[in-house]
Length: 487
Image (cartoon, rainbow, N blue to C red; front, side, top):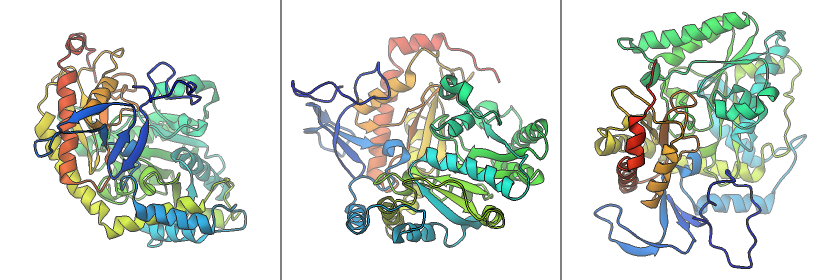
C-alpha cells in the first residue's frame, strides 16, 4: 500500500529497495513494540481472545524490531532525554585529537571488565563500517607483527557481513555478490556453513559434524597456504541470510582449535545476533570461545542513533601498540557523541530493567508457542534460534526437505500476509535459505523487553499468516513442483 499523498505532492524522490514493488507503507508513530501507519486505512484487529476488537488506526507489532535493531522498543523517553542532553552539550567533534565522555563511558561499560579478553572498542555508524574496519584491523595486525604475507580471509557460504565491497567479498550469498564480482577482494574464500538441518548427515553426531566442519577449514587454510591466512570470519549465529542457524554444539570450539593451530585470527560478526539478542550479552558466550575481534551494532543502542562497534582483544591491541602504535582507520563520525550517548542510555536500561533476562524468558516462551502453533504444520521444516532471535524455515515436504520453486516469492507472501494480521516480520533475504538460491524463511526478532502477551500476539499473527498462505492454490501447486533437496 502506497503512503497517502495529496494531489500536489510529487512522486517520491527516495530510491526504495525495489523499483518494481509497491511503495512502502508510511510509519508516522512508534511506541514500545508497536508501529502506527498513516495510509487512510481503518481495520478491526482481533488478535487474541483477551483483546477486545476496536476500530483503530492500523497498529503493527514490530516483531522484528526493524532488523533486530529496536532492542528496547521505540520512543523510550530515557534514551531520548540522554541524546537531547548530549546534543545540547556537544553534538559532534572529530577524533583526530579529541574524545568525549559518552564514548569513553560506553566503551568502559561494554568492555571495562575485559569480557573474553576484549579490551578496546571503536565506535562507528553501521554494521558494514564495523565489519570493514575489522577486515582492515585483521590485516594490519599481521603487518605489525611481521607477517605481511597473511592476506587471505576465509568466511562461510550463506553468510552476510554487510554492503561495502570488503564485506560483500566475505558474504557468501550469490545474489549479493553477482553485480560486483569484478570488484571483490581477491584474497577471500568461503567454506561450508555449520547448518545441521541441511548438512549434518544421518547418524552423524554433533561432535562428528563439528569436527568435519573444522576439518574443512583446516583443508582450506592448507590450500591457501600455511602462514597466508589472516582470519576466519563468521556470524556466531547466522542471521537474516539463512534464518538463525545455530551452530552445532562444539563447532566453534573445534574452529577455535584450528585457528589457534595455524595462527589465524577468529573474527565473530555479532552485528545482528549480539547485544543480548540471544539471552546473553554476547552470542559467543553460548559457545565456550572468545573472539580476537568482534563486531556489534543494531541493538547496541536500539536504533535511537546510528551506532556500531568493533571490540578488540588485548592480543590484537598489543600487536598494534608494539608496531606503529596506531590503526589506519579514522572515520568522520567515529565515536559520535550523540550516538554514544544513546548507546550508553540503552545499555544502562539493559541493566536497570533486566532486559537480557527478560529476553531469555520470553525467548523460551516464543519457542514453545511457535512449536505449539505451527511446529506440526506440513510446510514448517524447522523452528530455530536462541532467545528472541528465531526463524522458521519452510519446505514443500517435511520428509524430503524439498524447497519451493525459486520463482515463488514465498517469504514475501508470508511477510505481507502476517503484516495484514498485525505483525511485521523480517524477510529481507527470505529466498536462498538452503543454499543461497533455494529455500525460504521468515525471521522473528522483536524488542527484547516485550511481554508474554505480546509474544502471544506475534505467534497468533504468524500462525494465521502461515495457514492462509499455504492454503492458496498457487502455493499448493508449487509444492507439487518442488525441487528435491540433495545433500
